[in-house]
Image (cartoon, rainbow, N blue to C red; front, top):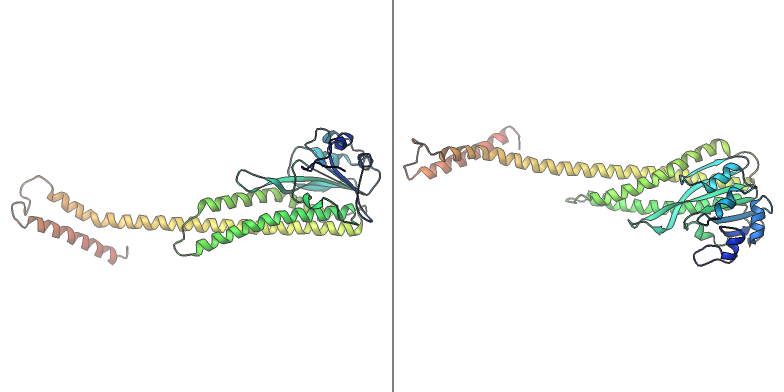
Length: 336
């Protein structure tokens, strides 16, 4: 099936099967391209096994998928709904939902954007759809040979997981550098760096948490029914289990970022307290000296030493003595 350099279907193909990026006949033997007519037949419940991939930005893709007779109503809704919260469920001999992946486009912050891949797995048919070009699907320009739709979906999920784990490893490396920075004596506080890391981890956690909850439900209840091939079902279970493990590691990464934040806050509080202590000692030491200087600065009579040459020496001696006495008292009461 011809494609443009941007991964969209050829205009002639898009007119025959709106929004179709690629259609493949999979299963035993090498995967082969499907014609638009064969892709439409597979979408209506015939000519399995097949994998159909759609671009939802095409105006005709949503009406076509919403009317696909070969898919249960809940699965059709999963392909065309506007919300992008990751989730997975099963219904009427089908598994469907959406999973997060990294988009080719970067956000303004320079971090890779997060998008979702929508999918429906039915007996002998895998349908995927997306609004943005995804990194995971870029590895499947040609499906591997001899894979059932279940096994192919498991491969795609593992590729998605690999992208998410790559982003997690990058954040983990940044936290490790920050932790080393904190452990060095005299290291300054890098609040903006940690804030950026925590925002990235929080975004990833918020994206994965709903998905992990739905995966727990699937593993406990919903993957039985006999419509999946045993090998494909086992591959799917393994891929979903890996996603759960990845979710726990992301939670651990979030805890490390929180500990680093607490360490930074503690160091900042210690530095503030040290500076306040120095200012307090200076104020306490200079208070008697200021009192003596104020007394000798009063313009009244009978001040000792006003008319004598030793008056200034006496005043300075009293000031120095008061400073020494104050320091001695602070040390005696272990206040410094």
